[in-house]
Length: 222
Ligand code: ADP
Ligand code: TYD
Image (cartoon, rainbow, N blue to C red; front, side, top):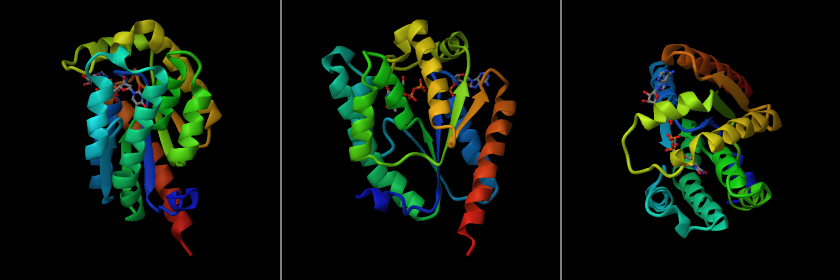
């Protein structure tokens, strides 16, 4: 898969980013339902995961003793999962003209692996350029005070506690990092106020997605 091949896709690739508990999975589902109701062919997927092989890697990175991976190995694992997901799920759907909604993507690796255990952002970016070479068309950053996100996330049950357990300090750093990233990739990022109620957040997101789909449809005209 060359860089050129990854850019021939004609659907819309939309990702959600933000700290744990910010409402990404809730809003991914809401957007998928709204776009399907409007007649779009939508694939809803997530990272790490989204293909059988990548889901296996998800279990390796999110369950068990996290200290068994160095920061560098973790970057390789998340990138390996992403490559499989891209090859087997994302690109085939985009080539078929579908809307792909993905709960987290490479921006999460830029933040969590790039910032949480030393400054490894350059390593993340190099591996991304070599093995992924594709950015989303549009990224919804659901922004909020981490105290709100953490209290919402802690309300959930599950075995995937690893990153949520990093606590408020790291989540503050991630929030600031995501807002900086939104400026770095200003063309594709939309910052959404995630403290609002679910319906208001969903309406903001739908407006941005509808705008992007209208531009996409316009660019398909001869
Ligand atoms: P994420 O996928 O970002 O971790 P979730 O979508 O799982 O976040 O949401 C975390 C929790 O907060 C869930 O219990 C969800 O029902 C709740 N929640 C999501 N959005 C809102 C909102 N706007 N207001 C109040 N609660 C919310
Ligand atoms: P996710 O299931 O989206 O968690 P949440 O719903 O709590 O936001 O993601 C699981 C964890 O994986 C999350 O804490 C962030 C982490 N993660 C990384 O560290 N790097 C990555 O590249 C991705 C995609 C996720």
